[in-house]
Length: 185
Image 1: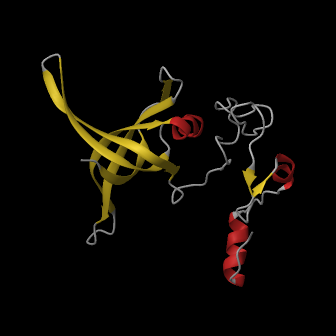
Image 2 (image 1 turned 135 degrees about the vertical axis):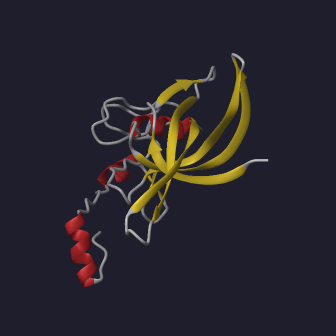
């Protein structure tokens, strides 16, 4: 049986990647999740026990995670929980693994830069497989441009997709929008 779980925590190891014999990407890291609660008598936050999880992801998620994540970053991971006993050198234990379906930075604790497709964070120098490193465009299997969906959900050719503008939204814009009860983009 496989249960879905969502865990909020910090990446506690280097984010490592490899590929299968077929060329599919695999990314692994350890996730530390510490229970916290507010002590109503003192008004201070109290840290409880830390649970450790091994996180593994595959294919596009693995490529994107490898380009976007680093040790120490706060993340939210959703996936299938797999608990397995292990034995090695006369010792035994339990491995608690999450086979991730999605991973994202915890935006309650900071901001991130999203790059659509198989992208990474700003400043990343390596391009994932299937992405033109010079332009950031996603390539189909033949090496050409894929059609990109427009805001209306229709498919657009590459020239239309290139003409779309991205809107940068700052915290100040959100504060102003809250006062005016509008959306800043």
